[in-house]
Length: 80
Image (cartoon, rainbow, N blue to C red):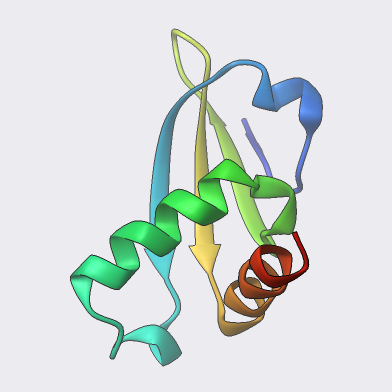
């Protein structure tokens, strides 16, 4: 069973993460994608498209990164 909204309870048992990039972000370099994926997974509550998938050992979190997500990450970094 998959869950499709941020859930702090499920966050406590996330054992694996996955990042999917929206097509409009295809021009971002692999290096930038790596650092941005790390940032969004550190603050999954900022992601608009999040999905949890049950695994034998816990949950897998998949975030589909959008332009709006990146704007929220940058705003958080600027505003602290």
